[in-house]
Length: 382
Image 1: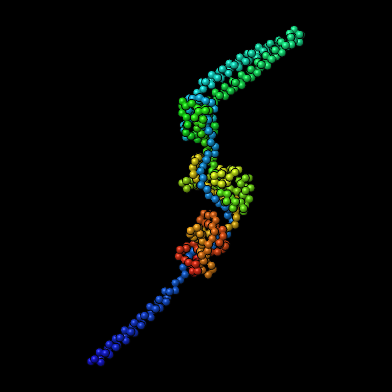
Image 2: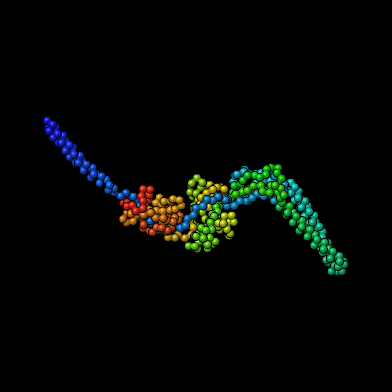
């Protein structure tokens, strides 16, 4: 009985050993298969050689095309104001009346002086006309004729002086009626009805009319950037010539909308800005709907200089870390290499690569955080 029990136990152990060995073999096979991971499929982009301009973007403040100050040219009290603050005015429109009564009296006095001088001239002329023939007949002395001649000259001078005084009096009277010097938007009053204004008072400027049919912006180009651009272009000549160095000038308002009118080069200031050390360029934008106001902060983008050859890649293919810029380059075998590059300007969704990349080389545009240098991938052209 014991022998039979031992035989059965031996058979059971042998069978379990066979089953264990047979079940272990497939597991090892599966493990070998899972170790062979296929390469990742990632999108790449072929670096493009293109001719592109230097593009610069500026944050600027707008200025009216022309500001005309309303300044009293005579002293007096403001009698009336004939406009609404902040509203459009037309050239020649009556704005302010300074009390004219004193100046009207001056005109009347000047007219009286002129009438008196003209009467004296008539009398002096009659005396002279009578003395001339008498002097020829020696009926009067030569000294009497000389006196008549001098009296006539004095009377003529008095008339001319009186005429000048009258013109001056009328001119001062006209200054009491202040009109708009140009079309535009008038600002806030500095003086009110009853204020004493004019030279020597605290009201030497009464208001300002701003013409905003066009709007100026000032572009400040750092000297170092200007020299970099000018070294490859005749930018210096163009800046102070016809402004052809600036083209395709666009303005974006504070709400992010593109202004519908392109800007145009106006002129370049003759000297550097003492505070910023920059070259200041004046650009003018037409503003027919008056949608832009003086004092707004806007962004202005302009192409500067001639187009030059360069290489561009999508911005999403560039890695920026602690001031260093790089891309992942993929060769024909699908091997990934990490490479440092020097960036230039942006053009829409593209980025200029100044050095570090050749035309036709492939760069990764996705999975930049998943790969490492030396790894193989399956590149898919974008």
